[in-house]
Amino acid sequence: MVANTQNLHVKSQFLHLTQAIEIFHRKKNDSSYYLPVEEFEKFKKIITATIYNWPPEKQFREAFTQGKLKYANEFSLSTRFKKIISSLETNFKNNFFGNEREFINDVVILRNNLIHQGSSDTDQSELKKLLKYTMQLSILLSYLILTEIGIPKALVSKNLINRRKNHLS
Image (cartoon, rainbow, N blue to C red):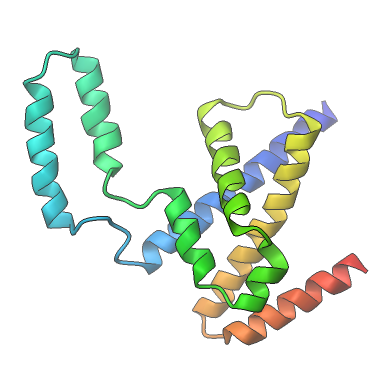
């Protein structure tokens, strides 16, 4: 029971951090869309009209137009993380994320599994990944907030790297 509670806490913390970073990016960037909103709305009307004249059942049409199509113009979580990580100070990025592609892919897969497959039992290797990425997401969110309030990237980077070194020693 205790292990299950701890697993649930780690999963919850991971999901909250992922969502916080996603929201941070959405609120900070007006250009979080593939197409200008007006242009996408025109496109959406054409697609919606086409789908409503197409034979699939009503449930599919509604799920598609109210779900997938509704958010189709917004950047994916993967795209948001790529944009965020590309904006980081190089020394910080190298010290905390190593293989960026692997980090982004793993975070997205873990998030999608937790969101879309519910809270099934977590094996030890997945739990280790969750713990590792939860720490990295926490550090990333700290970096984003501190630089957003005006602290220079190099100073934030230096302090977070030193804090990590001190914590590990």
